[in-house]
Image 1 (cartoon, helix red, strand yellow):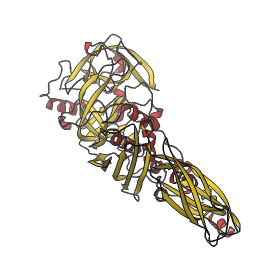
Image 2 (cartoon, rainbow, N blue to C red):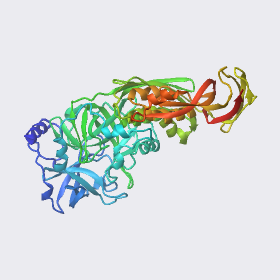
Image 3 (spheres, helix red, strand yellow):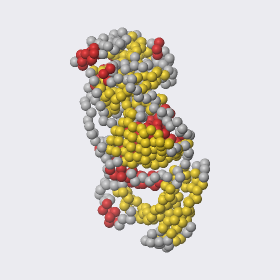
Image 4 (cartoon, rainbow, N blue to C red):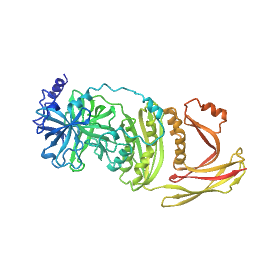
Length: 587
């Protein structure tokens, strides 16, 4: 039945001129891998430029048993066509269908070796790809596994599942218009995607030349779209198989997510870039025409016409005091992809400005709205040189990354609203020295805290900050803490995040972060307390501490010995880092 439906569909496409060796429109038979023999010849269909599907002469060399996994073989073949003599299998050809005697054999999926010069390549058998088509429909609202809830703790970025995938796949060229591929690659590496089927390339863009999904056919470019509109982030491979509105492509995973919900779009090939090391297709992507529902070992699968639920973004920009056009569009809400997409988008915003220089100071102020959680604020100022840009942007997006790591509730992003500002000067300061005018003082008195700030490769500032000591502070040693907002936030996150008991607790904690262009002066003493549910509870009597953290309960409550009596702040003309302590005695 499946093939009769596909035959009827192909018959409707008869107006589209295909090479004469393309399988007949009246049938879509399968060529079993068990019948393949070395020396057989077939045709692999793909687009090398524009939208014209071209045949590539292909010779079967054999079958590598269990190459992919138990019972999952790889067809080894060789491209012997004059059009690929300088490129071999090209990144972006993933999914290009191979036919022998008009029967579908499988999808081009692997480049056998780096600097491959004779066209050796691997094909995923269509029998294995069709297993993806038989997967049940995705489950909505799947909870986090219990073991993840129990083992969650504050940590660095978690690697994407792609880190566990094979490294010999033909890559899916990932384009981010305007962002240097090396910068994009560093973001991918930070999220554990190095060696996965995704490869950063110079970005194409969007195009209106590509039609809707009705004309999409095997051999045509197919894009997985992650961000649309004024910022385009997408990865392009090739369509292998179509039955009505159901499609299979790539012949290997993209991220290896399993159940998926990525937008799908048609694309056009601007050109095929020849290279022995890294040949790839440079593409432009059309509008979203459907959804990728499966991201499996042997293929991605989806449906044309089924539109995904996307989040919106709106980004206002100011560069050197000059207003730039506001950026608008949509993007994917996904626990692992969303932080990466925001990283890439902000990187594109700052690095694609014509006058963006080697040194920079960036600031953001925005909010992420969710369909199922309170808003999360993203704000701060960051400065450095061009080599620091990726680290600066990763720090900007860290609160969002942390929220997507928590185990209690999957955040469903509704919208992202950002205001960004950039300049071409570096403004980084450190706390070089701190002192007080009187190390022995009385309760209720005012001390003068002198702070020396050193700008990187630049000015030195000396500031005097008055600090009033509370009348109740007496007969004990006091630490005067002079710290940056970043230092205080690092301390607070390490202290409070492990005791959070809900996604809402974590959002409240993340929204309390200090501006990193402010200097804080605190009077601190030791006092027994607790951190419970991401909240500081200082100076607690023993009975209260025992009640809040009974030894018979697994409830997470950690001791905390700091009691902050008073705090003042000072604005700094740039990013401030560091921390100093000065001891005084109050009698």
